[in-house]
Image (tube, rainbow, N blue to C red; front, top):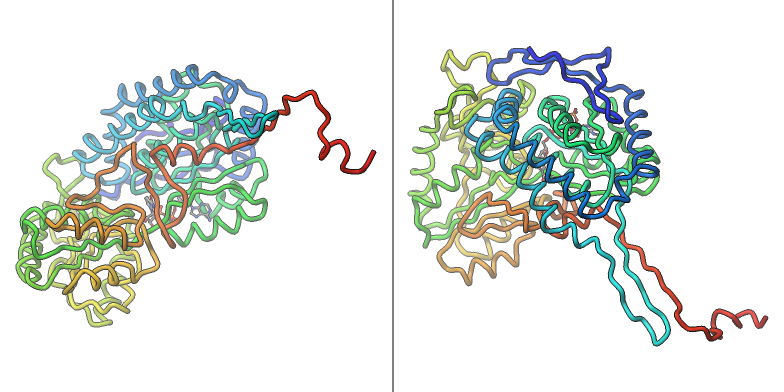
Length: 495
Ligand code: NAP
């Protein structure tokens, strides 16, 4: 058991008296004991990040100096990739293949890409505004940024935020989910080894309910970048409104995949399975509503269900495992409650819907891939995020109906369109209320492209140039270059 899971504040590793058991969701066993922050450590972290921003060298470093630090972080992640993949697998229950080939390499790439491609957007711009005045548009860091991330992609979500925030010259306080703090606490060690000045990065583990409000309300923080549920997002908005902070809100989803008659059925079925069952369905962009056009509905459903039944559930450390456990018993109970409610509202479970019987999995929080049909469009499961391996499959006739079904929920995070008619697909993409639309693919994230939701899926962007610039603010400076008196300025009061 790893008992050295300290907090990281002002360049120091701090063990606190209060500890928390960290559980491996595959086995239900305790794998580590992590220090928990109290209001005292929240206060220390805020003081340290504030001091490092106001008086430390980080915001003053040249862009090249900051770039070099950020490259060192990327290299540190790569050097520790095996250990991080193993830790993330143990703490989240994600299959080891996913953490090794998807999560950890993407973390390093994000730091590298942002330093390489966006940091120069911080350069100031000069604008001639009149014959004798010049304007300067200056981009400055926001200041102290609080980064709050969820448990479904613990390290990746932290790196998306931290890479942009640091590159833009901010100091940060990272709060991982208290269910999955291990990789973030390791990241602190990598950052320490990369030699960043004390206080630039602080990592505090603690329950959101206990320390979230103090962290978000405090005047020493200038910005909150939050990824998590819409419910908690709404609470954080109220905390941050007390002193009008800048916010990024990356919230939940109930995304729709629209599958037209002219698709290659195998490709559409295989990708649709990934789009809902990857990471046990615990993805904000999970395509939890699949709409299939009438002529192929029966064959799509048949093939989808046959293949869903063949997905290999297993312990996360087994390289053959295709689906691991849910994050916790509480999450599994929430999923079961949603299915029970859906059944009571008339839905039929045609695949899964239960805990697997395999004795090897009995101590973990496993749940079978589940397919529902006959789901009413006004039922809870049609509109609310389950965040588990549960999908509803529904029929549509034409593209207007497909768009209206997709748009009929309060979320607006992502959507998929499957059709060989690229003209129709692109026109439809324009009518979908979703921040990301994939056409004939799913789940491809590019550091070049901004990502973020509409409606109750939040606001603000991660990644892309737009995502990077979220972590800066714009100042206009006007310089008068003429020696002459200015009638407006000098004679307004008639002096
Ligand atoms: P969550 O319950 O909203 O928690 C997210 C983070 O907020 C955790 O670090 C949590 O800490 C913290 N938190 C909880 N209560 C808080 C409070 N009162 N004040 C401040 N912080 C608080 O979400 P989750 O269950 O971890 O993650 C699943 C959700 O995240 C889903 O809704 C999913 O769609 C969403 N998500 C969205 C995106 C996106 O990019 N749009 C990406 C990934 C996930 P504790 O865990 O310690 O309580």
